[in-house]
Amino acid sequence: MGPNVGGWIVSRYSWRYIFYINLPIGMGLIVLIAILLDDPKARSRPHIDLVGAATFFGAILSLMLGLNHLAENVSVSSLLLAGLLVAVSAACVAFFVRHEREEPNPLLDLTLLKSTPFLAANVYNMMIGAGIFGVVSFIPLYATSVHHLSTLMSGVILTPRSLGVICTSTVTSFLLKRWGYRGPMLWGVSLMAVSTLLLGTPAFGSWRLLGGPWGVAETLAALILLTGMALGIALPASNNACIELMPAKVATITGLRGMFRYVGGAIGISVTTIILHSSATRPRAFERPSSRSASSCSAPFRWSS
Image 1 (tube, rainbow, N blue to C red):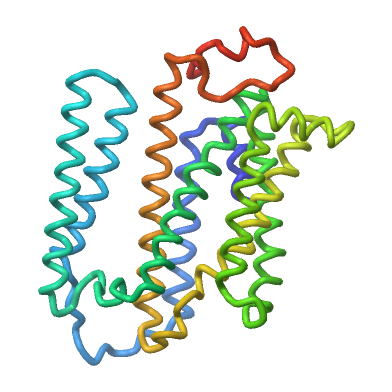
Image 2 (image 1 turned 90 degrees about the vertical axis):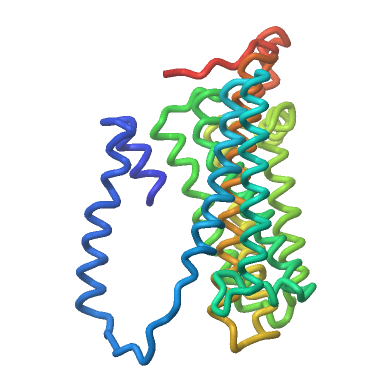
């Protein structure tokens, strides 16, 4: 529902109204939590690793600021500032790791990462987070700027992705015991890579020829459906991989998995933004459909207001 409602609000009113959606939803959730959830008395007051949280936040923030500053302006001063921010991020990571080893109640249980299966699963989650957020987040911009779809339609074409995730994740969840984890993780990523490649030019033009009378919107929706099906295959496996090795630490493993995925997403969005901004002064950012002339394809991409 989100992309459709968002596309309608942006096309009818303004993008600023998007952020107000969280207010009624948040207030409604607070009311439901107060009414429906029990509030058992805590037997002990948990210790929160504030130092670790602050250091980790500083590492991610410094890295994103460095990458975004590099995307805004490529010059000697910007390179120096970006390098300084990345160095600060690396220093925060080093301090974070050292602190977590000595902290009795760490934010990140480093003992889990010493296990090769856990480390591999979390690296996978970070990479798939970068792929999901770094690519899918820019599909509406790709649809409006390259294929000239309306803002409303750029949200509508994301609906098949959600439907694909719902259907294939349901089937995959029931078949994980038979398939295992490795197979679906590899199949999902492979299908996502193929569908993403088909979104580009000239592959997109070739795919449209195979689609016959389909228009641009229908073809984009079909390819985005494939990406959703790929995620529906990969995510249940990556969500549950390695949990049975330490069932007593399911909560910690779940939090660790989400952390790695969203860190990958933050990095993926920053890297994609760098590519788009740096391409603004070069031949192209998003490639035009293959039916256009070579001169049109080589025109520099301009950000619209």
